[in-house]
Length: 393
Ligand SMILES: *Cc1c(COP(=O)(O)O)cnc(C)c1O
Image (tube, rainbow, N blue to C red; front, side, top):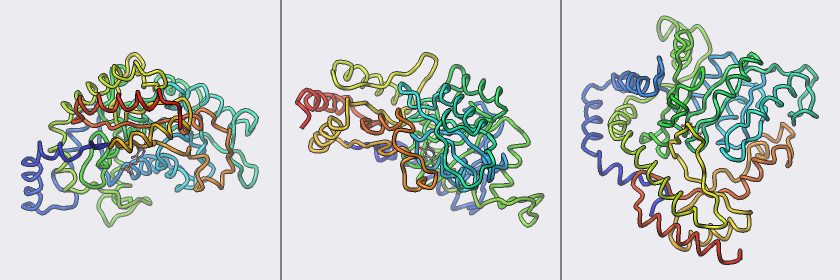
């Protein structure tokens, strides 16, 4: 049993992958070849976005989105501490300050209520309203934007976030690294904010065979700026440099692979949803296991299927039991970002974001991919049943 099975997928589409790779070898345009543009058009249409800009990774997509908003020192960006480090790392990389905001315990996504308080806390420079990072000097930070993460494939609550953003004059960036294919009300992930950023890291719902990413936006001007940032801040040509940018291009080879993979993506997504439903049914009987629930009007892309155990001790014993039965599991994420050494300079402490800390201590992710067999899911449920009825070792 595999946690994410990329081999079964490859077996299905190996001919298409080889054909597409061969095409690239034949035309030889390895940098920004025709496949990149074709993929951009295809995925823009799929998400319902006006523009798509391919780039080298999900991290670069986020970095480019912040650069397009001219983020720098003195700027406050709101995001959760319960995410992959890339989401907050790009904020610090540009010299801006990540303001962590706790998650909603039901969705693991940014809590709109906590966000309102966080904006107020920053605006009034008052740590009694919201835990704030320690900083040199006393000039207050300027709230600029929100990076909402669609964690495990489930979109954040963009209507609520949009209302706060409008009220407080902020923009929203969607970190859709895990949610490509998800739905929020009538719209697809990748079209839920001013700029959306996704990742094609192999383990993501739509993954390539290396690194890759994409930005989506409806804003013509922002799309043009993103394209410029992606190629060293180019102006009318590569050697006309009008802003500071990066080398953030998506590989032609990866775009070619993604085109082959995208053909079966909608079907894979349907399979993921069936598998999630089956988990839901199998696990609903188990007393100490909380299966994820999806709010009305949302559809997850099921990048991960994560259950909650009652406490850290139970998780430890379930995890060990699974591993001895040959069931791979993973912990996303064992330590919230505000308690990571990398963000130690911010001076956050245990207790600042209690929901994130609680979830980090008892969450467990189960195997999840479109090729997971019903009998494997049944075995997982049986092992979980016996591991949770036995007293925690
Ligand atoms: C994977 C991931 C990223 C970064 O994507 P890369 O392509 O690995 O750079 C950013 N945010 C989240 C939430 C992710 O899961």
